[in-house]
Image: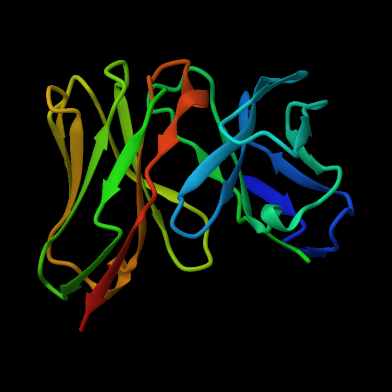
Length: 114
Length: 114
């Protein structure tokens, strides 16, 4: 049981390049989330998904797209990276209906856009 | 929408002393309040949570109190130890079936002085 995993762990991009971050969970969770974490700003929700085939915008969705083709995977895409997207990205998942609403986080992806 | 404010942003306490972190929220519909601990370079992990039908919850050296009327909740750590050094995040959510709306505070960096 690996929990929530993310690939890659670290990536450097040039402005305008594209990339996809992969999140995978093996806990059969319905809900999945993508956050970005910037110094002094906590965790901000980018996009989330409440089930396979569904996605929705969070607090800071601009410049990102997501897909949830399989229940266990949640992909975050940057079509044209900008320096403002330099951040640490965390994926999380939670089980629909769990009273505690615990979110389990992945190890994070550190992205640097030059 | 929900807004969560967290204070202080940094906190330094002597080992063995107590630490208190406070958060306020704006949405009266919020009824689930988790606290996450994030060690340097690691993922956020849930350490304790409280629901609005409970005023206080304790787990060993950690306790959380909730004042729903005043819309604030606090994390209390007693007999602090070096391993308590980390960034702590509070969060608020409308709760059941609304995990997607969890909003995090900006974090408190807690340092334990030997």
